[in-house]
Image 1 (spheres, rainbow, N blue to C red):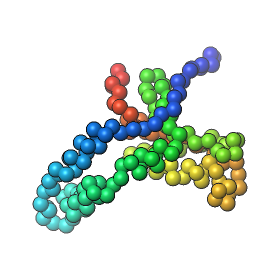
Image 2 (cartoon, rainbow, N blue to C red):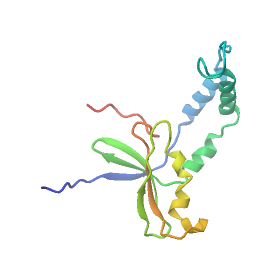
Image 3 (cartoon, helix red, strand yellow):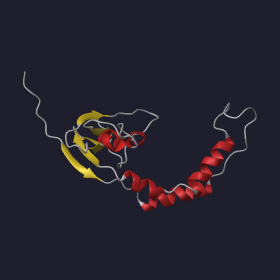
Length: 155
């Protein structure tokens, strides 16, 4: 049996959202027209209108994209090219320098961001009064759910 030898190109990465995309999003939110409520109980015939109106109001008037971007960019993001696919992942090393590798994966409808809040506890347990070396945490984004420009479909 021949051992598999492969080089994987890995590069650091900072997620960014173009200002034009945010401007377009705000314009769409400002122009959104909601249908009148459907007869019957909320959620029986789709999304509850009042809930959706509140969500729309939050995204339009309260959500601060720059705060979220700063939080996301506080983690170490990387891109790896594997067989023509670009994989986006977060890699946080244990503060001890001797972490145990740990991969945290997610599926739909979850998101990699849910795991980011756990990263400090896993990488630096002593900050939380927990003994141990900690983990070298790798959190890949599920395929096709990444913060990258789209890629052509593979054949």
